[in-house]
Length: 257
Ligand code: PGA
Image (cartoon, rainbow, N blue to C red; front, side, top):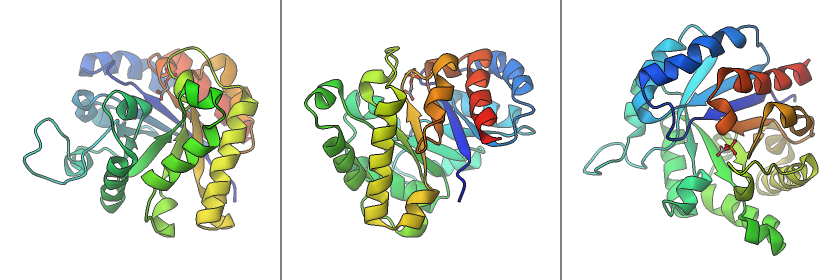
């Protein structure tokens, strides 16, 4: 089964107002108009989600959140329910981004709870995993990936795991300009696919899309996307501008033909 490329833009705490978002999207939607074979997702800050879902409505672009809480409703000051996200037209949510894990101390256990509710609500999760520089240097990459995979994806049924997009994002490559080499990335992607195969089955492992993330730019996207187990990317910095983000998407489109 052929996996369709999926490229997501994570705007982090940038472009958080409607006018900010419009500035980028106006140009971007024109640039990606002809894209046919790539799923495109943009995850703006919560404050720009209602505007962006409306603005991209007639295009192929889908909107995602960057986070959500694991309860539907209640006294959880400052948190966002997936119910609200669904209602304003959000289709995806990023979960367990390394900034959530390392700045806000999110654990695999917490991410697992969020993941289960997202799936339950039909909000498609993009779940991030990735090692720190010191873990890579200590030769612990595979071990860390396995631990995050087992913890974040705990007790998921086969029909649930197939609705997830996994993003492998080595923490040392995020926002640093240091991209993993295509070989380094492919090695981990292969490992993740093997883990899925071991936990579920070969056919499940072949269906799941695994994005790479960490300093993807127009000049390195093609080499990364050429790898057998890399099914697209999660892009931070380069997704903030229409030109760079559309170039990255076009690299994926070109390889799909
Ligand atoms: P970056 O961010 O492309 O700026 O490295 C990637 C991410 O955090 O998803």
